Length: 256
Image (tube, rainbow, N blue to C red; front, side):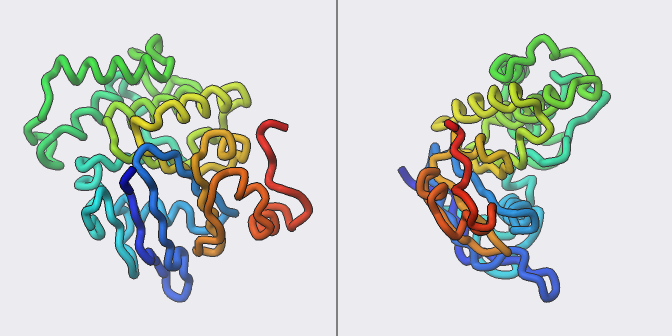
């Protein structure tokens, strides 16, 4: 499989602070890649660089063999890079259906203008909204204002919005944050099921989720790539154990 995403010596400095420093990632098509690390490791900054929210100080971002460094978030979105955020980004007064519909039309418009020509029919747009709601198990909430949904259902709505945009690459920032244990397990299963149709890069603190759904894990520490590999390898890695647990134990195994 070819690489969907590459970062080449990607760096971002804020004054004297290197938030991201020389990060090289290669994410294969259809892969689930988790990005983990302590608070302040540079995970969200890395997402901001990949999605164009921040320009890099140095390095390149390559998407499907195309150098997209410096492109605006809206341009990257139309190319197929879709992102969800750690903090909820829904329109609370619009229904769940309307929130998803906005994402669908935003993805298929010929430009960032709301008056840009939509490259789909109204019937196909409705079908995409309905499929996303059904896939996330929230179809019965379709007509409810997003602001009235429970926290867990709002997170599911955000994922539904993202997949309705039919991304090539989906970046999820803390998708299970604030969910109950049952909601977390169900969401982890759902996310795993999105691959290989969609390539996922996920920032997640819940190690049981990370270990159960990831093909590969990249560990950031102080802005640098500390380790990379499949879950079993990362679990045994002494440097990762030091970062997370002071070297006292292995990274948790979700089967335990």
